[in-house]
Length: 161
Image (cartoon, rainbow, N blue to C red):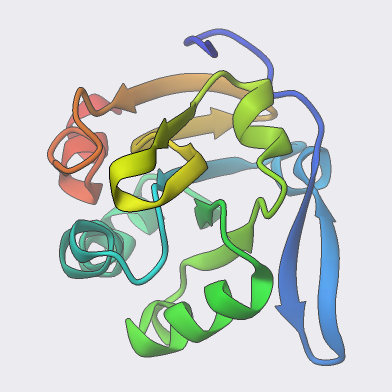
């Protein structure tokens, strides 16, 4: 599992662009930049929609004040779902970038994948938040339970940095 001090593995994520899905390299998003990445088990799920995403909409200005260049919301959902979710939660308009790890490659590479068959979740991401500076993890807050959102919320990560 990824830890503080580790360099993120390079991977390709996907976002919806003007012309449709676009590939985004993790290395390009993080090189020479200060980036927050928060991950959720699934778009349109209860805690993710009602607590996690809103916490980063609420705290965006505080992250800006700390020199954060970008806030990224990551989920193992397709880019079409992530785009629609960003619109429905108002996250897209507020600033967080909604990125898809559709095949769970990045999530698996950092050891943050899990399955929850009773609720239909497979190869999903654990709930976490991290601060990445020039590709290196400088803060990492992992939730013990994917149904809770405290240390990985915007306010929880702000306390850690």
